[in-house]
Amino acid sequence: MQRLGMPVSDDSILRQLKRDAAAVHGGIADVRVVGIDDWSWRRATSYGTILVDLERRSVFDVQGYRSVDSAAK
Image 1 (cartoon, rainbow, N blue to C red):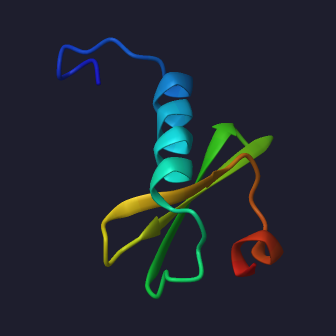
Image 2: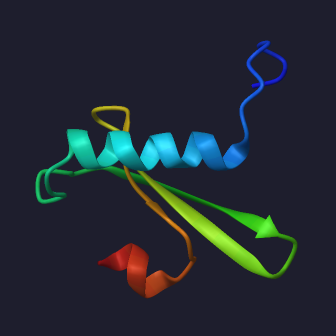
Image 3: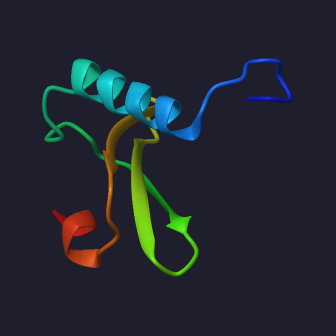
Protein backbone atom coordinates (compact mmCIF):
# COMPACT_ATOMS: atom_id res chain seq x y z
CA MET A 1 0.00 0.00 0.00
CA GLN A 2 2.90 2.36 0.61
CA ARG A 3 3.93 2.01 -3.04
CA LEU A 4 0.47 3.24 -3.99
CA GLY A 5 0.81 6.23 -1.65
CA MET A 6 -1.72 4.84 0.81
CA PRO A 7 -0.11 4.42 4.23
CA VAL A 8 -2.31 1.76 5.84
CA SER A 9 -1.31 -0.86 8.38
CA ASP A 10 -1.56 -4.59 7.65
CA ASP A 11 -4.06 -5.01 10.48
CA SER A 12 -6.34 -2.36 8.97
CA ILE A 13 -6.37 -4.15 5.62
CA LEU A 14 -7.20 -7.50 7.22
CA ARG A 15 -9.92 -5.92 9.39
CA GLN A 16 -11.55 -4.43 6.29
CA LEU A 17 -11.33 -7.76 4.44
CA LYS A 18 -13.11 -9.48 7.34
CA ARG A 19 -15.89 -6.85 7.36
CA ASP A 20 -16.39 -7.12 3.61
CA ALA A 21 -16.40 -10.92 3.72
CA ALA A 22 -19.08 -10.96 6.41
CA ALA A 23 -21.25 -8.48 4.48
CA VAL A 24 -21.00 -10.16 1.07
CA HIS A 25 -21.19 -13.84 2.01
CA GLY A 26 -23.99 -14.75 4.37
CA GLY A 27 -22.86 -18.37 4.18
CA ILE A 28 -20.34 -20.44 2.36
CA ALA A 29 -22.78 -23.05 1.05
CA ASP A 30 -22.76 -21.50 -2.43
CA VAL A 31 -18.95 -21.36 -2.78
CA ARG A 32 -17.72 -23.94 -5.30
CA VAL A 33 -14.09 -22.99 -6.09
CA VAL A 34 -11.88 -21.95 -3.19
CA GLY A 35 -8.43 -20.40 -3.14
CA ILE A 36 -6.46 -20.72 0.09
CA ASP A 37 -3.34 -18.84 1.11
CA ASP A 38 -1.58 -18.64 4.43
CA TRP A 39 1.07 -16.35 5.79
CA SER A 40 3.16 -15.84 8.90
CA TRP A 41 2.25 -13.00 11.25
CA ARG A 42 5.51 -13.58 13.06
CA ARG A 43 8.21 -15.83 11.68
CA ALA A 44 7.52 -19.45 12.72
CA THR A 45 5.24 -18.32 15.56
CA SER A 46 1.72 -17.46 14.43
CA TYR A 47 -0.04 -17.81 11.11
CA GLY A 48 -3.17 -16.65 9.30
CA THR A 49 -5.25 -18.01 6.43
CA ILE A 50 -7.34 -16.25 3.78
CA LEU A 51 -10.07 -18.08 1.84
CA VAL A 52 -11.21 -16.66 -1.50
CA ASP A 53 -14.20 -17.52 -3.69
CA LEU A 54 -12.39 -17.76 -7.03
CA GLU A 55 -15.54 -17.63 -9.15
CA ARG A 56 -16.69 -14.34 -7.63
CA ARG A 57 -13.14 -13.12 -6.94
CA SER A 58 -13.98 -12.15 -3.39
CA VAL A 59 -12.69 -12.95 0.07
CA PHE A 60 -15.14 -14.94 2.17
CA ASP A 61 -13.06 -15.66 5.27
CA VAL A 62 -9.89 -14.48 7.01
CA GLN A 63 -8.73 -16.70 9.86
CA GLY A 64 -6.19 -15.86 12.52
CA TYR A 65 -4.78 -19.37 12.50
CA ARG A 66 -3.61 -22.07 10.10
CA SER A 67 -4.82 -25.66 10.20
CA VAL A 68 -6.03 -28.29 7.75
CA ASP A 69 -9.15 -29.02 9.80
CA SER A 70 -10.35 -25.41 9.85
CA ALA A 71 -9.77 -25.00 6.10
CA ALA A 72 -11.64 -28.24 5.36
CA LYS A 73 -14.72 -27.05 7.30
